[in-house]
Image (cartoon, rainbow, N blue to C red; front, top):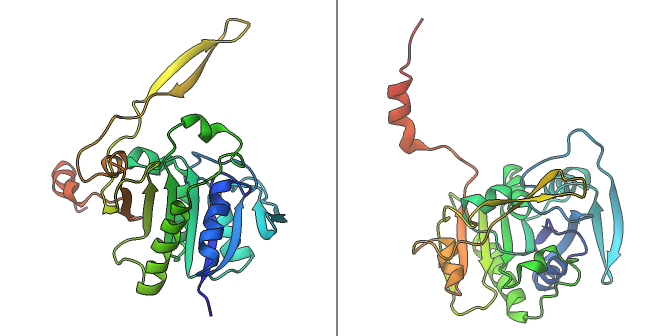
Length: 263
């Protein structure tokens, strides 16, 4: 029997990236698609707890899928607990746009879905594709076609190795970022600090009242060994990520500032 994969994303159930991953995975696994019904980029690990979640069976490109009226994390939870899927692996993506650095993975719905799967006990891989034209991130995701077949081969290769050899120990999520122009092989990386030079642009509506766009250009590069640097060099970044956000290196200083007092 083939292993089973739950496939989700944050660009929505109709995204070309999702279905490129579906095609890549279908040769090696039985794939169930459970994804948000609409675009949900940058929602991180937010969960719908103040409204009901509706699920619709749909058919896209001749294949069945479940469209979830909610966030990527909702889709994972619905797949695991409402649809009672028992996947060997959860795959999130292929996201249109890279998810690199502390900054990006904390807000990414693609990585958020993978973290939620890991939190629920299923290992997960997040795939993201760098795009040279950032406008494509904001286009209809159905139009952002992935013409390069090598991208699908990377998804197949990474997931085949995990399914055959097991998920890396001491790791909850493997964050994979594929450069828009592949000029090298895999590189195991750490997270860079930032992906963007954050800025805010002020504009004015017709009544003269201000409103704001959060924007800012990409960082040009980052130090060697980071995910940002690897992708900028054309290599495929593999970053092991853990759910444990504890900072053990800070224990001594915090204990000195807040000594234990018995009462």
